[in-house]
Structures are given as structure tokens and as C-alpha cells.
Length: 401
Image (cartoon, rainbow, N blue to C red; front, top):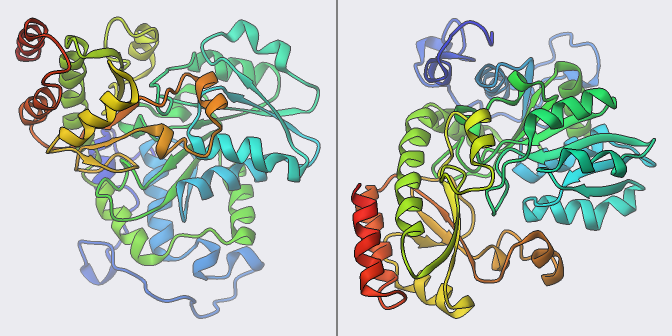
């Protein structure tokens, strides 16, 4: 039950666990079976079968995820994009219209801009930081509004309270991708969001070894999305479910440590002459700093920045680092660097990327569990020659403080 435990740290360990434990097993066993004996189930969606997302591994995750965000229900999927696409196809039909934030994960942007037309669904993009402008994009057939808690990759924070109020006023379903924040830093149901989406590949699992997704929110909507998922087939396999279940138990300690490190690294980069701009909502000069403080319990472990000198300087910097791994994705124990223009947002046209503020030289950093001091020293070495000696000394003293 979502209200059984108070602290999220306790919920991560104990919510959703079998009671009594299966054969006394402390860890959730892997139910590596495609089907189960018929036990008189009424109706198609109740049959015990992996594709129908109702095996013991699925159900334990559903209960734990719902408890983490103090929501009514939850559903796991085969990937973050399975969660996103299935949710949108479940709440929108031919002839419907979606309002979506204008800076989104590239896969979401591509699904909306490239696939919606074939389903007869319309859309408009809105500035998440300008609630006064939303109403003029509203149509009689608008059914939902979609935002991200912290946007990928520019780390924007929309007026999330206004999103919920706008959705309620106009009878819309409010949907938020909570991947960057995680339930540790933001719990959408507590703010009135109808649905919360996650790429569990990232922070929830935290070990870069599975692909998974989740939808969390109102039980009636989760049931509808589950039925759609059962037809589309994007269900999570038992072994991946086990790994996600295990990885989630350390989410709180990982996220808190990684967020603290990210803050120190953002402060270091902000003070370095070779860095033109740092995007991190925990920095006081970030445009959404006050909103982030109001809505979030932490600023996440993601940041992005521009290295002075353009694409060549960005590539040179990434190649010179030793600790971070140059790779797509995020949220694992390893620090990762990537240029979104070549990975997460490569499906967008150059014009759309620039319109969203994503330059070819933008570097995104997912801060891992390495010592912050080691990461800062490595970044400083990689930036050697990109800034003045005086600026490097200043940046070093800023990081130490």
C-alpha cells in the first residue's frame, strides 16, 4: 500500500515485496515462465501471461512504483519509449490534439512529430515556462498536456503547478516524464499530475544493464494503458523485471550522492573560462532556479554545457576526459558524456534542434558515483588549454569551496 511506509528509502526496500515472502526468499525470485496455470480468471486481461504484464515480477514492481510516488497504480513496460508511446496512444484517439512542451527527449519529439499524423492525432508545442501563452494553443479537441519535470537536455523546469491547474481547468489529462528527477526528487501525483512516465533504464535501475519503462498514476488510466500495452506487446521480461526490482532499492542513496556531485561539478564548470554556459537548475543563475527549489527535493545528477570553441572544442574536450565514458543514455553508476545532437536528439532535424536550443556543440553529462574530486580534476585536465590559467585557478578555488 502506498501509505504503509513514510520514507522513500523505506518504500524502495519494502513496498511491493511479497507477503509472505516466497519460500522465505529475501530477494524477489525470477519467474522465468511465459504462462501460468489457468485459475478461473474472468476475461482476457486477467489471464496470467508475461505479455499481459501480470506475473509476480510485474506485480511486485507495480506496487513498489506506485508507493514511491504516492500514486494509485503503476505499470512497467519494455522500454521508456514503450511507456511514452503506449500512454499517448491510450489517452489520445484519431481526431484528438495534444499540447506538448517545446523541449523534449528526442524520441518523444520524433514520435509526436513523425508518427502522430498516421494516427490522425494533432499537436502543438508550448513554452512550459510561459503559462499565459498556453490557452491560445488550446483546441476543442485537446485531450492532454505533456511536459518533462526537468527537460532533456537543457535542464529546463516548467511551471509544473500551472500545468496541473491548466489541465484541470480545461479537462485535460496531465502527463509528465519524470525520468530526470526520479521519485526521489519529484513525485507528480502529490502535485496533481494524472500520469508520470519513466525510462527505468536510467535512474530507477541505475546500472546501465537493462532497458525498461514505467507509467505511474491514476488507477483508471493505468488500467486503460495496460490494456493498450497488452495489445501492443511492449511488456517487460522477467529477468529485466528482477534487475529493475533490485536496482531500485539503492535509488535514494545513488540519487542523493550523484545530485550532490553534480552540483559541485556544475559550480566548477560555471567558473571555468573555457565553458560558455552551464545548464543546471541548482545554480542560482539558472532561469528556473526558484521554480526548481519550489517543486524539487533535489536538482538531479544531469547537467549540460557549452564548451567555448564550438563542436571541435566540445569533441576535443570529450576525447581528453578519462573517467567519463562517451556514450548515450544516463542515470547509471558511471559518468557519461554525450553530444545530444549525435545521440538522444539525432532524430530531430538540425532546424528543430536549434529551435529547441540544442546546439551541435552542447555536451550533456550524467554524473555517476565516482568521487566528485576525481571527476573535477579529470574535467579540468580535459579543459587544459581551453581557458586562461587565471580562470582555471579561479575555477579550482570555486570547486574547493
